Image 1: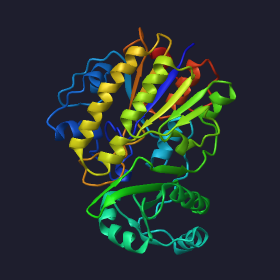
Image 2 (image 1 turned 30 degrees about the vertical axis):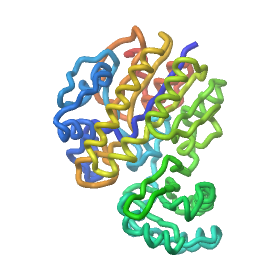
Image 3 (image 1 turned 180 degrees about the horizontal axis):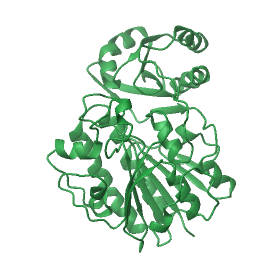
Length: 383
């Protein structure tokens, strides 16, 4: 049996993309700029694999045991949904709609009426900042906090004492129905707890995404009788129709524990993992020191996963976009993402910059000896 593990380290960009100027992201390099901001990094497993060959990372050498390169995105947009969909082979040709000045009142009214709620906020904001700004009013009025970002997201925050997680999910399901009409990529439930001045968001966050409008590597493998396993927010981004098994996680440590167990004892053919903490906890909050701590956790955990892989297994580490925590803004950054592919007794080649995240889906087709139905080219013979 051979298995493929695709691990998306959410927000781990490795340099400004060719079209970064269109997104205002010239100079962005999440991994390199984090390393510079903390005075250099100590990430022995990532260094050994070859992340330091992909881009210049302070205190990381360029030796590598894996096949490494960078991928640039062809889809329009700069969002987790478009990034994951393209990794899975699907190009987004029409950008999701964004609402930097707030959502239309017709949309707001429809959701409030059906869900029997009221919103406050309805503006572009950082998630932590808007809790501090509107948390007191939310607690006293019971109105839910609505906000967005530079991405196509309709985010609803609610304290668990005001609105239970289950009720918040139902409100998001209602919102998803109406947001489809406005081409909004994701509705996100943002439950939080704590007291005013000390609020913190929980891991019960849930994304309600649009269903992919075409074939992806998940649907293609599933239709070819290969078992699929989604870890983290994969089911939020793709739905559960083509996932044999899906689990939500409470952070990257938990997600990597699921992956370790699967690599050691599991039997799924394809495992698709999203590690969200670097983006959610540190990138959007402009916290390079926290980002480095998150990288250290991932680095420690992936060594154990490499150890328990079989010789027939393939693991690919990549990203979905950047979120440079040193660039002075809280939104995603348009960047190359890493492509680090490792097999025991495999090759250690540098394949440079490749156009299209979708090359990953084409390589996975090749790995499972299926016809390539995606626009990319396989790099399996270089792994």
